[in-house]
Image 1 (cartoon, rainbow, N blue to C red):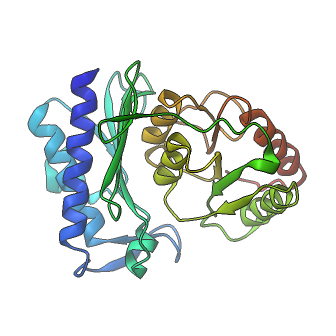
Image 2: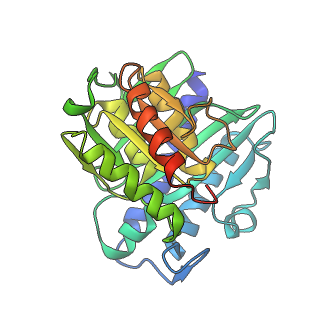
Length: 276
């Protein structure tokens, strides 16, 4: 798995370098699924850089990439999430932050085998640091091995989360869960706009737990393998094993995860969203 780990790092670094080069000239800003779901020309350029880095190393590589335009521009072969092997790429996780100049956005790259993340890397563009992991090899900040925190109580935990693009019932549910955690009380809750970075916060012990609804596989795949290799538990928001069909994520150390899951399940059941 070491070659796969190194290729994840190389590809994420290629995307991050492209984003840094274009930070003052991001290009056109467009909306996708909603007015709050943004994409820029920089997202596309970063995706092309990531795909080409992987393709150069493995011309047979297949991809699932968030931004559709990347396939043709990079000459990347479209794959499926259930392929025997597929690269899953989020070229710029945290586009809204990037557009506004808020210093938190990343590039996330993961290798899936039969739907299971086996290697991944997340390049935090602003901090110029990369967190990565591969099955059986551990999780790393750069070349340094890392582990999640051991906080075992909610009233001693710092949590991270995110908010859905759908500002109707899904937001109502998230706000109810958020309020319950705050009144537990937890030490605090942070929101920075990049699910991939949030997973890395847990793996690095900077945060104790992360939950979020309404995510896509490219938001989570790299973070799942990174958190697991750092000693954390990573499941869907329903507590079931994480799969590419999971509509969200909960990740924390083995002691804290069930406590978070209890809140998310209980409060979420009281506020059904009708969706993810």
